[in-house]
Amino acid sequence: MSTQDLAPFLLQGIEFDPGHSLLLTEWSELMPVIEAAGPEGNGYTWEGVARLLVVRHLPDVADQLEHDSESGMFAVYSSYSSNREVLEALGALMRDLYRSPERLGVLLASVDPDFSDD
Image 1 (spheres, rainbow, N blue to C red):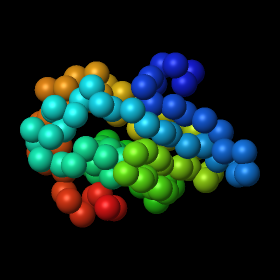
Image 2: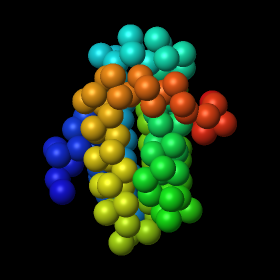
Image 3: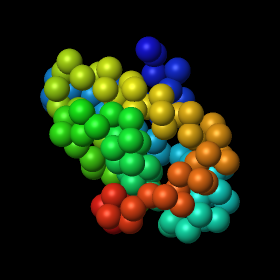
């Protein structure tokens, strides 16, 4: 899967590590949906979404992911070089939500605040 298939999410290798990262830095077009659901709409909001998707759809890989989001960026890493596929699967789930604002709004209403590290 190419990183273009996951747009607007970016999947890239980590130069200093054999692992990979999945990033999102721009989501302004979805701010009305995010704000209507209640969250602040920052990188931590997307981290909460990612954590929920992992629990629901990829529970066996939760311990292979490391979250490092900031207010202006969502970031999740896999430090295992063989786990690009894990980030591709998570990226596809997140991309599909990004492209479906209605589904995103419903999901945001169910995200546990403890899933966000703000």
